[in-house]
Image (cartoon, rainbow, N blue to C red; front, side):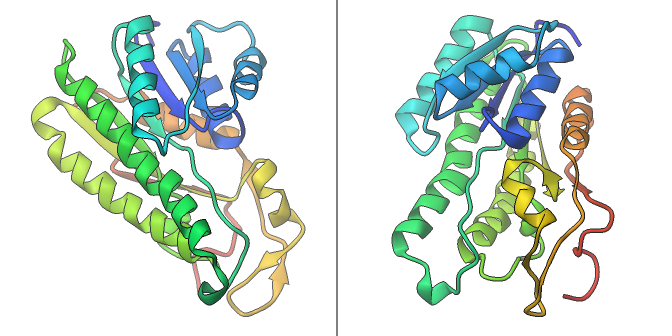
Length: 251
């Protein structure tokens, strides 16, 4: 991968975003680490060690259109173009019945997971459509919750189902401009956020049980594969999950 390729990764300070952004750097991508806390982004870049690509930390609240526009402007100012957006930043909420979920929580989750993904995809599409050579790739983090909910997860699951619609429409609308869009649906990658799964989380039958997890580097490898394809090929949907997690089968 040539270092002339540029990627933007949202939610890059921790977890999946950090792993993917670091892997892109090591593969030679100039990589913009985006998140709300710049100190974490700087630490994530440092943690990647000596790399072929150049890292850039940009603090940004992706739920705010002006900050997203500034993020992409900074990326283009620094690296000249945008070849990849990994639309990864997201948030959830504790397992809660819908009638006990505050409206403010719903608005926050929708604001980050859905509106934030829309705003970043919008800015990426605009840049990819106008740059020369034209085109690029958008990879959305859908989660296995884009297909099957966990108990008490209305805000998170609703937004992740919506991401699937965003992915399909971008894949269609991007065709005339060589903009490819795909979705990676991740199940039980071991990050700080996923640690409770190793102890016990609510199941569909009402029980609380520990679940199998996988190393987050497998997610990074999968995104690298998607990102490395030529623009005339696309992974539209990919599910990467811990083999023994309770996803396939009856709840």
